[in-house]
Amino acid sequence: MDRSTNLELKMTREQYILATQQNTLPRTENAQLYPVGIYGWRKRCLYFFVLLLLVTMIVNLAMTIWILKVMNFTVDGMGNLRVTKKGIRLEGISEFLLPLYVKEIHSRKDSPLVLQSDRNVTVNARNHMGQLTGQLTVGADAVEAQCKRFEVRASEDGRVLFSADEDEITIGAEKLKVTGTEGAVFGHSVETPHIRAEPSQDLRLESPTRSLIMEAPRGVQVSAAAGDFKATCRKELHLQSTEGEIFLNADTIRLGNLPTGSFSSSSPSSSNSRQTVYELCVCPNGKLYLSPAGVGSTCQSSSNICLWS
Image (cartoon, rainbow, N blue to C red; front, side, top):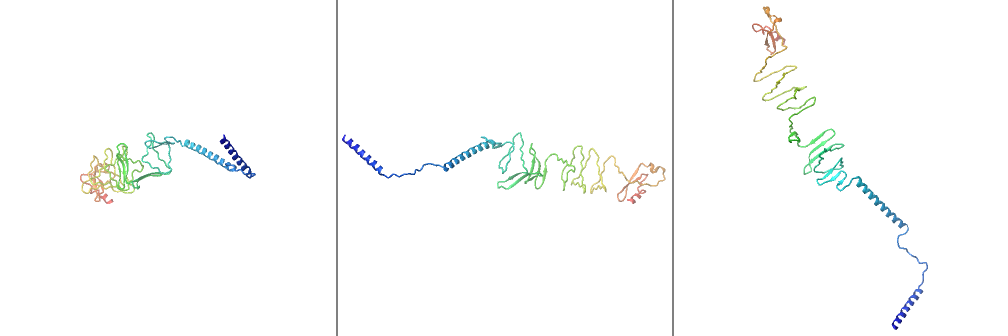
């Protein structure tokens, strides 16, 4: 009991000393209080920026959703563009503003492949060093191909129908058909084993301002099996054989428009009005003329025609 009483007295004394010390401290009047936090215009600016950020996020989200909707973004691709295991597939009309690098371009089985441009379409081929080896340009006025050799092959058997290089041009088709009204024009020589016109059509070889020459080391043969053969000229017609002979083989050989000479005869039966048989005569210059036939040759009697030539 004594120990507890001493403790209580001691605690009461300390409380009294503390209480008297607090009362003796000078009291300051009008003490200033500093509030903790953001108040005033700073608070309003903070709310304004938070609101502006929220509106921007909402607009960005709306624009993103709108772009996804318009561009038709899906799991497989975007719009007409589809990503497949074999590559990229485009459906409909597509426009490329920058270079496109691909290995192969295929169209659908039920539609053609169309490459369209406002100016021209150019296809280039390069080697492993990047050098240009071939070029095909489709323009508004012409189609140009620049390469070492240009070939056109048949779709069935792959044979060459047309080929061109620096040395020659080869046409491998069975029939070469020229539909122009002026025909085919050749600036230099033409070498061919056979020239044939279409059925029921005439074959005409013409040189409007110069000569037409046909040469062959083993002979030139012109045949008309079912019709006539005509040779017409304005001046002289020369048939020349340097080592052989000129052979005319026909049932009837006629030489029209030959001059007819006359000779005097005492026989009344030999008048020109009843003359039906003539003799073919030749002048020294090669001119032919007819002379009325008689018992003997009458060319000397009618040789005055040679003086007129």
